[in-house]
Length: 305
Image 1 (cartoon, helix red, strand yellow):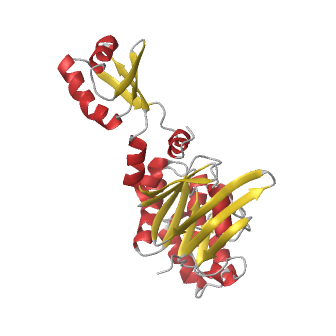
Image 2 (cartoon, rainbow, N blue to C red; image 1 turned 60 degrees about the vertical axis):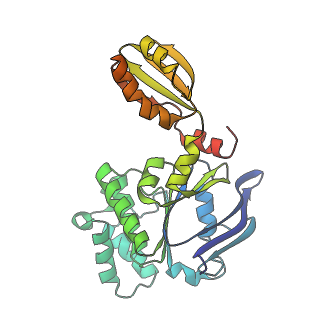
Image 3 (cartoon, rainbow, N blue to C red; image 1 turned 45 degrees about the horizontal axis):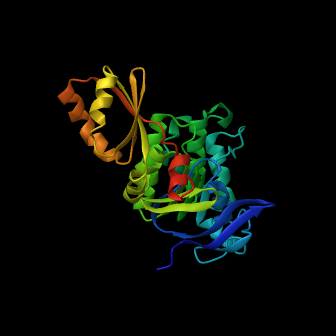
């Protein structure tokens, strides 16, 4: 079965700047997380595969056609852009109805009501968008995309500005859409958010593919790289002395009440550390990684770090 979205050797450049380089991949049913640090090329890739920008090289097909040559595909595809893209003088209901009319949705009134209920915006649908928080505007944008009941839903940083309750609600919605057989692509630079909703991850850095696979596969790749861990303890010198005998601890540095550790096996350290502290009677006050930025992770994955 042909996947709904296919990209073959796709590149996009602007003058001397290469935004996307030689990307070949497909997107099928379910939720795929398009993951990478800011500037990785995620938004440009989305614009190319939705037909908003022409690829400089390569080929894109959506539901079997070139989206720039067959506009009928837009009746089956919807996108939620990262930027505001709303008419703030309209109410949420009017904005969603406008999108229904533009897409020539059958029974638009019913479709608007369903979309508003889907994003749980009933109580605020009559208010002007200019009075909405950023998170509420995101929900209105998602409703506007869903009003046409699309087979493909592409979302660029859809959780920006949403509070924890809104984030949980939207994540649950995207998961349900994926489970129903829709093709859902969610672009984000936040690893934890993507992990909560996507079974498959496409990771990008510097316009290139860094990794493709499940969350478990990406975690496994990340586990193999050296990591820096900071530990606050009541007896840091004793802790540092005890840690010197632990396999996978490659370096230790003392900074007042803090022990900084370089480890090549962070999982083994995580299992050993609580028992080691208990055996030595040391109180651990805080344990945290210091190099968990996506930039460092993905540069590691492509061998650039």
